[in-house]
Image (cartoon, rainbow, N blue to C red; front, side):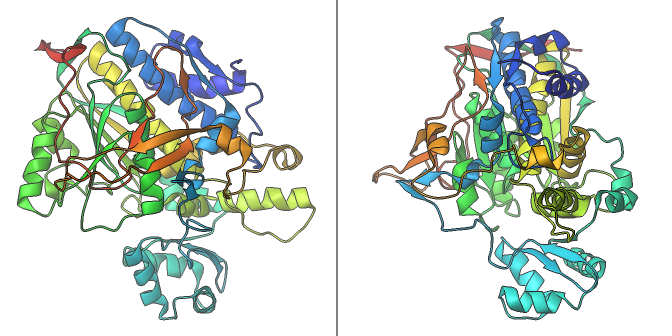
Length: 511
């Protein structure tokens, strides 16, 4: 594999901004001709290789700091873009989960009186909320008729006022003129901020994988955050995925992103569960969350609260639209952010140019690229922050937003339509039996047994196949073998640290 200069440049900037030594980039290998790795006018091969590669290289660097053992990290671009849609092709006991689309039947893009609007209705309460606004029957025809009478920005505003999920279709120029687009100008896709003093992390012993002994609280949902937690687990972390029993799940996505984790549920409106969560914080190394900015503060788990409870912790946060601007508290998902920030218009224009037609049909990217890129950038940022707890100490915050990640993908440049769509291979279909390309990149994962709910009778374990991790580390292969495949499999407790293989403690002086 060869590290090409355009991809090298993208990786170098992010690595340098994270405060990591540039000489370590010599250990990162990317495949030739990253783009077009898929049929798109955007450089999604570069985006996938770079973000997955940096998540792997940063894990390898942390391992090197702990063990003095270096290694090579390689990523193939086509494998990487397929991993960017890993939720699409996993199987359980020899069948694809669900049938057809992973989307709710009324979700999607609709014409309005003066434009287009995209609604997100995958969660039941979001579906009910949109239908309450429209006062129509729950089918696509009725929704289309109701939306055709609305002004697209007025519907977007009304949905946001009710904490529902809908965005108006905008071009890049329109987004850049929008107040939130202006608030994001110059914002990096990932920000590392030192938020407090703490002793340097002192390491001794040997570790089989980069994140052995690292404890991660994963309080995220849907895709980007869970992808981050899945990646950290693959590199050896004890990832405890904590969800609420009061909130709906998305089983078709949750099962695949549970790989390598343990799962439990806590209700943070309940005093006993809040106390349990606080006790977990005191022994955690990473607190990963995807609530809206400030959403955890009233529950006692804002960044100031967590850092006070455990100096030296890494607090990683994901939002849709960032930490500043009028939309900073707005709910959002990848599909909505793509629509709001100009990607659907730009991709549609490029596709129309390739087909030689004049009518614009908005077109989404071929995968939830913002979600997946954000997930791997979160993992990269967490690993980078953990490394800096060794080299300089401190408590650290990691910030990633979907909109800023989209801004970064735009900065990578575009492909000519005749190259992006004619030369870029389409993604394999979501069918079973799996296409040979997906089957050849898949691995087998067994359902793990939990410690929750008094499990005593063990039923036959489910068997999952899923696309294996695209980042290949030469010395410490990723851990792939097990998944809970449900959201409340384990007790809310940490596994014992592997003291016999290696210890991890803090030095006695504050830097």
